[in-house]
Length: 214
Image (cartoon, rainbow, N blue to C red; front, side, top):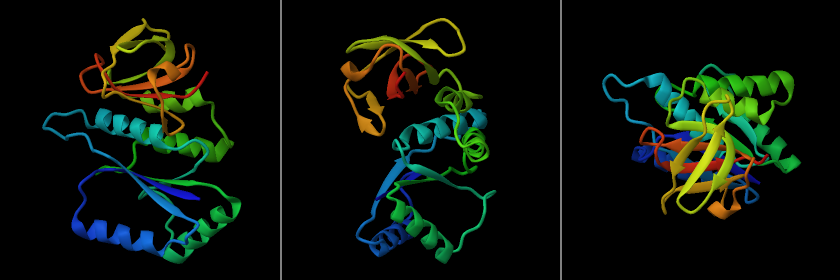
């Protein structure tokens, strides 16, 4: 069983690092703790904070391993003491499920992320396109969501799910390409599958591509 902690923020204070190492040491041997740190976007003066939070939420959701049960750690959620949390983990351990804990940035989890998780609780499941569309809401040209038209070593073209014009983004040797949590090559992308593309320069260059299948 793997327990994934997917958190917004990096370079944590020493006391947080020490606490993480201590709790990792206390876990049963059957459990492996995996930390995914997603750097928080810079909150510059005049920045559109809602867009930054939406982009961070998109990166969190794209990092969740396929098949993992997602647990949102949010101030608005139900409080669990250490004993209750241990009981929950033991229950999932018995079922062989991997867990993914989501921890938000300074403002907490992205509202879009909370919404899609609530829909999962209320309805049991949600269409993947609907989930990703929720993350795209209020995002900017730095978050592109669509169906892949074509891809090669230097670029990819996608058709937005909202029916807009096709978009072409440049790929570089440092572009991250992943599916179900695992790194893949651009040749592993299939035309027609849903992709979430993250950019840092207004949608010209892709720094991360997450593929979700047809």
